[in-house]
Image 1 (cartoon, one colour):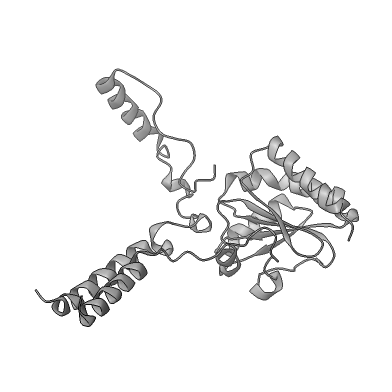
Image 2 (cartoon, rainbow over the protein chains, first blue to last red):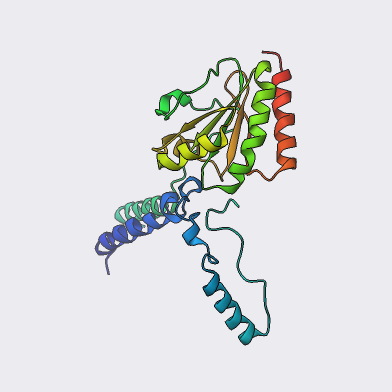
Length: 77
Length: 169
């Protein structure tokens, strides 16, 4: 294939790949994490579900505790 | 190598470079003048800052360490305001209601404003929440501190603030 024929395809690839490297798209900025910090984002927000998950984990792995992390998703707690 | 092929290679290299270069905007750097807060249409009243050591704190109601830092900053403001120290706490909350409720409940001794449009914070680009920027009496950024985890951070900030207050105007 001639180089000239490849050019439109390359332009398209570069345009799409360029979007992936944009700092605005690749990560949520620290000041934009209000939704992630919401209570509903906590993995342990439902005590019943947590107890059931713990039970399954204990039954399957013969281990308890050590699951999850504190806080929600704001990354600041 | 023929001329057209050279031109093609240069074009290809340029496209690849443009595509894979992350678009990272410059952050506010230590030693540079901090952006003028008055230029960002912040909700609330800005305190007098000319000739004073200013601590600009970016915080949010949804951020745990931010809440922890408020009593410390309140005490610091009360103690050091007569020596020329001012705190401006910039909330990055996009919703006004949680912000108002939070400020009413904690009733800090320092001035709080809200950057609801998040223009100032997007320009400043703090690396985490909370982040405070300590400015000397000339508005030059001297220290950036991210996070607030109790006594150690309080001690460090207090030391740095006292250093700046002791500098000759």
